[in-house]
Length: 217
Image 1 (tube, rainbow, N blue to C red):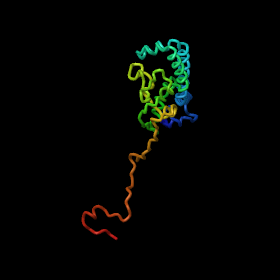
Image 2 (cartoon, rainbow, N blue to C red):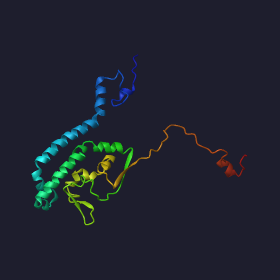
Image 3 (cartoon, rainbow, N blue to C red):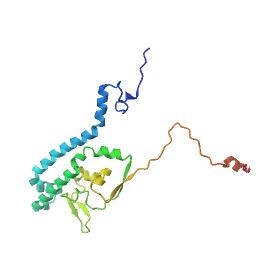
Image 4 (cartoon, helix red, strand yellow):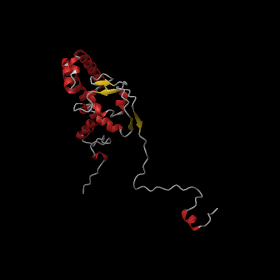
């Protein structure tokens, strides 16, 4: 009778699958899985470069598009001011890799949630609005930032609605409102293990106390 041993390489993504018996296809699949985040980052950078180039070419149309999205014709009336602000925003988008981060930020947030917990509340400083360059950014009488399209159909499709997703998001804009706190790792007893209870020396058993007997010296 022929017996077949099952090694730790039965699972294709196992990091132990590096011996000579591992089929080449499995080793290739494992390497591709480990390199997936880098590939997604590279793909995001390519897509970002294309979209930003299109935005630069279509920059003269920016005041018209901004007015249509916001429903505010003041952007169109102040054509030159809106044009300059839109140019600053495009440069800030490239600096923050806003488009590229859409390709990998969700996965990074899931990975960081194991070790980091985001806490805080928005103080309306406006730094996360592309370093205060967003064309939709406005301020109230007290100087607090506010978004001129907050809650509309276009806003809900932006990463602004998800900020901050990761510790990196907070560090990118040097956000004073949110912070990433380390998650306390609580040790857990493995199931199936017998745990020896800790008993203080010369402790009096409960049965002895309940029966009224005096403890032994």
